[in-house]
Length: 429
Ligand SMILES: Cc1ncc(COP(=O)(O)O)c(C=O)c1O
Image (cartoon, rainbow, N blue to C red):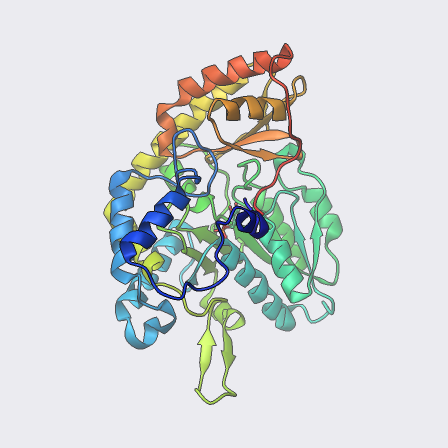
């Protein structure tokens, strides 16, 4: 991304409000020019960008619903917008069902996976005051491939993170987790699936450790929550990961990923409503009376929540089954064909729509650059060096083209015709 000083040098950055306004037509025209350097928000040639395409009709429903509520401030939902309260209740209730929650479970909406993880750690930390009084310098234990939002939260809260250093079989390192537990440990984390490898951690085993040591276990199902319940119904064998596993205390599920809501909607689900007191923050000592919220954010648009409710009702179970079926068929076609290229290796057994592959023979980053030169945009992993794909419905149509190019580029790298230029990878910066 261009930095401010580059934009200034190119005379493209304004540091001051213009003295006089301009017409919307002129402002819009300038924005359309600015947008020309952007990639599209989704494309069948992109496996990157963090937005998920569920079909033009789904985009239209989500956008229309978002537009209906774009100016509503969801912070004041309980005071003045009962429709938003209803959407939240319905979405949380549906996700609790999908996650096999017991009677008496509860949950709340957040603005994204990161906020859900922040609130999971915050809630576990407050819970530990009552349930782990010996933890005087709290620590959380997270697998190597868990999302960095755990570390970001721990950094904010002054908690120590013990992050595992490897992912045997591309899953959480169970033995290392057990060795890391001590009197200060308050929480274990697991992913369903992890972002890098798309593989579910051994959650029943981690949950047994949590139960044995009296710890909170958070399962990050930000990606899997809208895939695995439907995959099971389609006959795929999905390892246990949700509240059906005793010992799972909380789960995060993003509706703005494969739930197809517009950005700004995730959920934090709790095994028991009684745990909610540890999540909520209440403050009284100021002139305006009670300030009491379950989540981190204050003001936020009601648009995301409205789009989530609208899309979930528009698609219903049938619509999600249809989409998950297409995505998982596409994944199988990718996996089979990539495995058919001798120089390449898939890491682990991807169970959702995230795939990482690398090579012990060719420079995989050179392969990535060769693919980029042919117009295929993907992410990378550094450990192990890999090309990282996330699949959505749009990729069903390009499997053959992608794989033909991939085979050619791998041959080109092997024979020195395609060279790597850049090493390294970044997830977001
Ligand atoms: C496994 C996992 N958890 C949490 C998050 C954070 O989600 P968000 O980007 O919505 O904050 C991500 C983001 O991709 C993720 O991959």
